[in-house]
Image 1 (tube, rainbow, N blue to C red):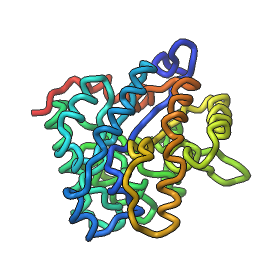
Image 2: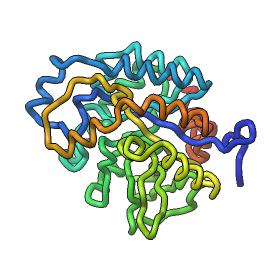
Image 3: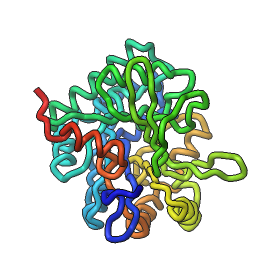
Image 4: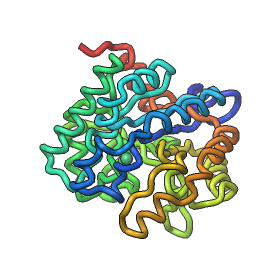
Length: 301
Ligand SMILES: [Zn+2]
């Protein structure tokens, strides 16, 4: 059944999200040595994120921002402004470390710290989480238990569904409920397209920069015509062609710097060609949680 929140002006509404992090924090360039330099490297995240919110406001569109705790501590006004503008604030963890490089207790500390920082800034519950580089896999299923125990209600970190996981109903967005001994959580995975038996990632990031916009649009329209709600993601640094270049593996450099100068225009086209809203507004089970339990209205104690 299609619900009214999923349709706006006759168009199916999709979920748009951004992972708010500095250009030097991406996993491809991550090293303990570089991490120690983070505070000395020039910050560009606030300007890049505000470039996105200006674009969104031109198209009267709201989105979900998965904000890194480390960034929120250094740019509190940015987080407050995003919330005041009506965007959803969700968590990207604190230190942008891949899940499988952490112990369960380190991961718990990371997701707890970031949730607390964000909630203190916006005065509302933060219910969504996305791991750096979608790094919750079948090897790190324990992370789902931790997220549930730490009060998260949805996760957006799993690109390829766990083959062995029991799933209850799957929504138009491909959202499904993960049932565990610790409780349940909704999984909101980025969109993929089934081509010749392969799940082709078409939902954003490097893939959005790699394919010509006409190809991305064709893939996404195809999914839309099948009745699917899209879950799209991008990063603020992807709209910053002038960011300083970092040393790293050649493949990482090619991937990271590919077509940065084209993303802003492609995002404009995307906003014109599709209708978007935040995850907590447009993905049905998440909206039901928010509406049913008044999560957004509750001030954090
Ligand atoms: Zn990230």
